[in-house]
Image 1 (tube, rainbow, N blue to C red):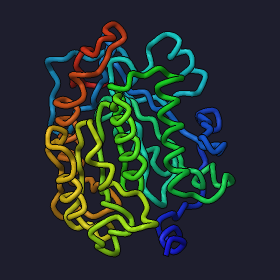
Image 2: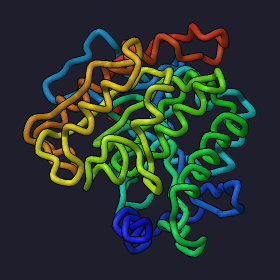
Image 3: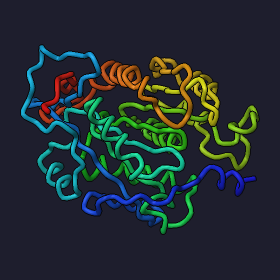
Length: 320
């Protein structure tokens, strides 16, 4: 059953190319090399992230600032210089994005850039072993996925020196597995990440096809077992018409999160599994902003204030 589950769980698409100069290469604890990219959001003069207005939204009380109108994907050299200057990851949240199955970095780049622009956050995304430009590193596995997100997190905290309170994990579908694992691990170590967003998550892989009532031997990504250990604000997102991961997985997963860490969930009526339709994107972005404003930004460290009380983000109009 384990091999059959793996063949269904891991379905890497044909690799999508990225500009080689923009790729950040990470090495996990198994010696596997995986690619990643870092999108830096536009910022105002105080270092706060700039958010593009939603349709019909006005920002007349915030004058335009002379900054790029779109987030910028950064090269490893640019990131190294920014880290040395202390300007990377200070004053804004950084989302560590773990993508879904049948995706790779090339597929998700437009979506990540959209999130960065609309939320005013940095985005760091990585590929799993066996996906994208890492297809030559072996077959994907649960163990490799955990090692992959560990390598990504280590790069953010040790190389770019981004404060842990500024890091928000975002796991979509398959990505909920490594994201729940890392959120629980950092909490158990007494140094929890700033937040956790779970988009169409599952209780565990076996439970998608068989409700066992408990975690069976050989099950993969037992998010339901990690959830009680998490000590970061958790936002769950799920469409009520999801035909791949049943909607009730999020409802039940929310119940296993300790109550003080349950953010108001985002359950979207009629939405399926694989995308956020344009018709609901304004509502989707508005809810994510509220989550960031309430649970994340008050604890974000800025370049000037390193004690955990950094400046709050602002909604300002981007210069076109």
